Amino acid sequence: MLKEISTKHVHLYNKAMGDINAVKLKADTVIEELFSSATLIEVNDKLYTKALKRFRMGNPPGKKKGATIGDEVNWEALLEEVPNGADLHFVSSDSDYAAAMDPYRFDPFLDKEWTSKKDESAIVFYKSIEAFFKAKYPQIHLASDVKKNTLIEELAKSGSFFTTHLAMQKLNQMNEFSQAQVEQLIQIAQTNNQVWWIMGDADVLAFYLKLRDEHSNNLSVESLKALIELVSEYEKSEAKEPDDDIPF
Image (tube, rainbow, N blue to C red; front, side, top):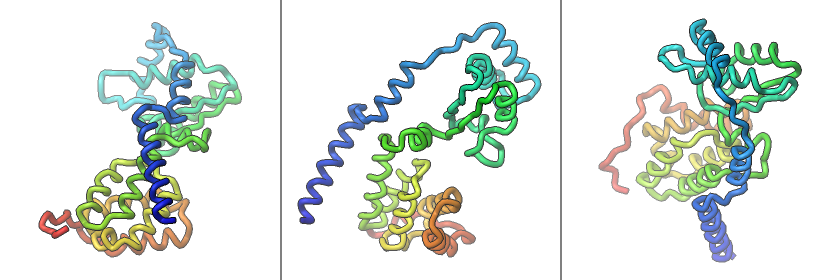
C-alpha cells in the first residue's frame, strides 16, 4: 500500500511540475484570458497634467523622491476610465498603494478619493495575484502553490541540517502561505529534530518569526501557542549563523 501511494505521489508530482514548466495550469489560462481582455488606457496630455499636479502636491501614490510619475499616471488613468459603480479589484505588491501601518490594507487617502469620485464603487485590494486567485477562484492552484507544497514536503523529509538549510533558503523567498501550510510548517518544526535542533540559526528563526508575525491572527490557539514556544527561546538572543563545520 505504501509503495502504491508513493508511486501515485511521484506521478502526480511529475505531472504538476510538467504542467508548470509547460505553462498549462488552469491559473495560466485564466491569467492569459485576463491580459488578453485588458483595455489599454492611452496616456494623453490631460492625464499627464493631472498626474504631474498630484506629484507636485505630494499626494499618493508614488514615492515623490525621483523624477518619474508612473504611479500617479496609473492612478489618474483608473480614476478617468473605470466606470462609475464598477468595483475595482486592485492587485499590486507596490508599497506605494498600501497603508503605511498595514501593508495588506489599501492606502486610506486613495480609498477615500476613489469612493468620493466613483458612485457606489469600492476598491478590493490584493497584495499579489495569489491572493486574488484565492479570493475569487479558490479552486485554482497557482504554480507557486505547488512549489510551496513541494518545499514544505522537502522540509518535512529533511534528514540533515544541510538539507534543512537548503529548504529554508527557498522557503524564505516565498510569500503568503495558507493557514493549512503554516499549520503544517509548525508541525514539522515540532516533530523533525533536524528543524527544531537548529531553530536558533538565523535562517530558520527568521522564517518562523515571519510566520508568527504574519499569521498570528488566523492560526488556531494550539498552533499559535506552539509557534510562540518554538521561537521565544531564541528571539531575544542573537540568532546564530549556520555552522559550516557541522557534520551532516
